[in-house]
Length: 126
Length: 126
Image (tube, rainbow over all chains, first blue to last red):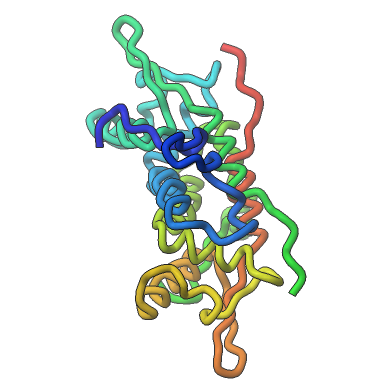
């Protein structure tokens, strides 16, 4: 998957005219396309090391972190880089080089969209 | 993984005295144990067919559904059963046999705990 591939979790698909993905999971059954989009995001967070790196960036001062700030997760530097790339490919992080270091930032709009997926809607009466 | 294995996402681990897993991802870096627990849940939702089945159950009347209600996801019945078992193993669904059919129910407390993971906390000043 190329680095520039970002999921349309918070953008409408102009070519298809659909609303931004996705409704709360409890609202109605997901369509195949909604499920493809949302599953990719969940899958990216479905690894303990990636989840630790993601929470390290998300909770860091200013909502961004240098690799030098977040590498203390018990795996090698190449493995850290591999997982950060996966988080970027899934559209959960963006990165920017400043001098020697690459800084990672959480896409808060994506986090909000994922939170919306898991929002509880009233259970329909049986 | 045995059927009875349910993740401690919403229960405290009595043996270790820790609080229920897990804080919002933006609050502080996850510990290894928190990441293990939460990643298993995200991984279970990281498949499009499982996500469609999960949303079909979650959005069904009364918050539960019979297999007969939710099998319209374009895969074979054995594949549906396989994915429903994975969702059960991850603690996201419970099931109960009533007469001919097995009914699946979403663990709303687990859904709430996952929503909390993705809750936005204020970004710390840099």
